[in-house]
Amino acid sequence: MQTQFDLGDAVRVTRNVRNDGTYPGEETGALLIRRGSVGHVVDVGTFLQDQIIYSVHFLDVGRLVGCREEELLGADEPWVPSAYEFRQKVRAAKTLAAKGETLVAVGSIGEILKVLRDGPAGVAYHVHFDCLPGRPLLVSEGALMAL
Image (cartoon, rainbow, N blue to C red):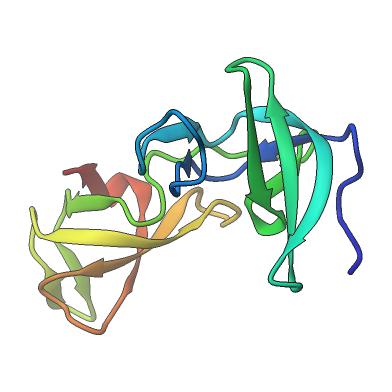
C-alpha cells in the first residue's frame, strides 16, 4: 500500500478523535484531539491489512494517537473549519423546503451524516432529519443550529 504521508510530516486531523477504548487512562468516548489540530507523523502501520494507520504526535496536548489516512490532511493544505461534525445532532434553524413544499420545520432534529467543506457556497452538510426518514438533505451551515 502506498502511503500519503511520511515520517515527520505535519498533518491536520479533519474530525474530532475520540477514545475508542484503546487509549489508556481516558474514558471510552472521551475527546482526545480536536478537529483542525496539527501533529507530526511518527509511525505508519496497517489495520486489517487494508487500512493505513498513522501514529501522530500532537505536541500541544502531549498525545500520540492513531489516525486513519482519510482523517488527515497535510498541514499546509487548505482547512475550512466547520461549526458541526459527523454524527452531531442539530436543529433546523430555518424551514427547509423544495419546490414550494415544506420538508423540515424550524426546530426539527437531525444528525450530520457528512461535512462538505469545499463547496462554492461554503460549508454544507448532508443531514438526516427525524421527520424525513430515509431522505438526507444538503443543508448550508447557516440553516442549522446546535441541539
